[in-house]
Image (cartoon, rainbow, N blue to C red; front, side):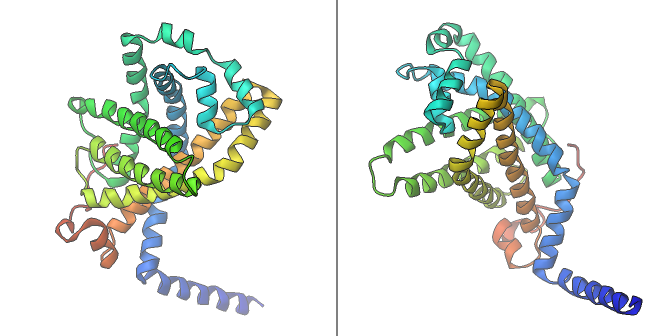
Length: 294
């Protein structure tokens, strides 16, 4: 019995060793190693928490820029895709546009945007850690604000596109395609800006496309899953249940972002055709490991 088990173990080790010598095996090994090194759960939770802290100021800004809407709570509920019952709970938990409009002045907008840069700094640490590049100094702090503004513009643009595709055939398909394009551009620009173009744009574009695919897939799942979870949380725990459910959903998006970045790095390091496709022939040494300062 022991001999049979030992032979099976040795056979499995030989198969695994041969698999690791294949291009796909090396890619999987680099992805796993990079994923373990980045501490994905801690990074994703940090990003989710910072994103949640940044969501309220960003949505206040967006609601203030759209005074024709019935209220900030309704705008927030519409952005989440909630049902009428949960919309009433969300709308009752936040202030109206009248309050928002009176409290959000020039200084208020500036403070909201500056507080939202905490998410940009968390993203910068994650990207620098994965790509093995030094973090820019404070002289590049304007890039944190540029990142926040890029996300705000993208969210507003997606909302306008969603309204524009309501009357066309297959609006869900158009919405998915437009989200894919917008998020690819955003998640290509964000690491490029935060890392001061340390990484080849072609590699970042590939990573941005992978990020957009994962986020769009989660959005499709969220159409069914998110309203159910938020409604259940609202019924059982009120506003606190909404907070817990939404942070959990943000964790899923943040985990997808970390995973896509690690996969992009692993593909860029490939020595074969995949690596040349991702990083370009002129950047064969662009992804060589450097001193990690994140």
